[in-house]
Length: 92
Image 1 (cartoon, helix red, strand yellow):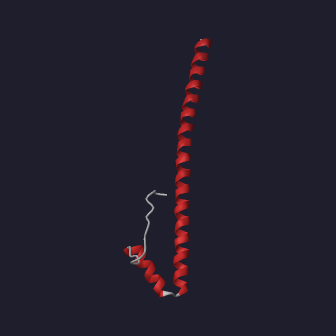
Image 2 (spheres, helix red, strand yellow):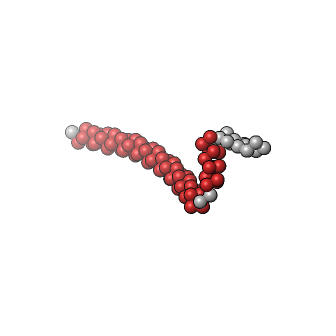
Image 3 (spheres, rainbow, N blue to C red):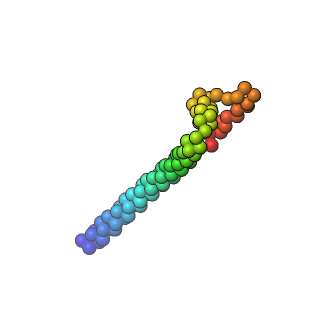
């Protein structure tokens, strides 16, 4: 009876250990994904903040022609007749 209990106890501890290792691996994966998502949103926040700063400076300058030109370029895709526009398609 002592040997049977000992084997059962060892198997139970082994099974529990395997379960904990697998669980910790899943938690580590979740943590890595959450960190990646956090970094993405920090980048988005930084880009948005820079954009807000740029627009605030533009509005505070009071230069209506610059505001109209910026809107025509960004929203409507307008360019000057002699201007060459290069588009970065690398996705960076």
